[in-house]
Amino acid sequence: MYSILEAKELVADSIYEFVVKAPNVAANCEPGQFVIVRTDEDSERIPLTICDYDREKETITIVVQVIGASTFKMKSLKTGDAFSDFVGPLGRPSELIDTPIDELKQKKILFVAGGLGTAPVYPQVKWLHEHGVDADVIVGAKTKDLLIMEEEMEAVAGTLYITTDDGSYKRQGMVTKVIEDLYAEGKKYDLCITIGPMIMMKFVCLLTKKLELKTIVSMNPIMVDGTGMCGACRLTVGDSVKFACVDGPEFDGHLVNFDEAMKRTQIYKTAEGRAYLKAKEGDTHHGGCGHCGGDK
Image 1 (cartoon, rainbow, N blue to C red):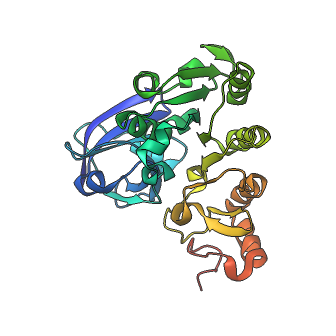
Image 2: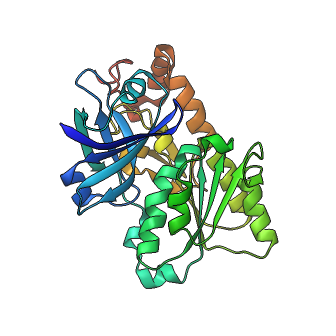
């Protein structure tokens, strides 16, 4: 069992933060990786990106949005309760980790976070800040009420830009409008890292491609079982078939086929859709979901 040292509500009845005692994960994780969590033995396994970690306190922080039965059950957990399973770290760390610090200090880096994507963006920005590297951050939310981690991000970002779709806080408009405004003001960047809803990442990449700005995306939103078995997070990157959970979750955003990934995610939700994908994808189809027969 993995004790919950702190549980709090970030957005009413929607988004929750848990600080969990997980010594092995905390000792080995890096920004960009994720964990698989089960509330109890009867719950499904949920992949969640690591929001923060403290090696000395042996803790991992995760942020959970209530979208189904298992996350609904998870929201009832309080400080002092425990998760049944907490497995990780999984996935490949951010490419920033393997880049020499002197080289990073020469780069102008921009992070673009949308909604819950703020949580996995934070540890990367924090890691850079701890190593003396400034990075600008754009955080977008539908409304002020859905904005999370503003104070935490403000503490580690070079400059923090916040925008809301409805204009209820700070700027009004999409994150892409902020990028356009920054470039119009003469700002230039060497690298963009964007995490959030797939439709947001798609349009960020369309814009940054025009700007000739290298862009990394995190495809964690399409992961289901987090092990590469179910095949839900299959996507095309350039000319290759990849799986977000084992090959990523980060990829070159200009090579990701977002339209295919979004369509496939919708199809995968039904039994008929999974059978269709099995027939269409043949030998490259993963059948670990146990529903389409691809594992036979």
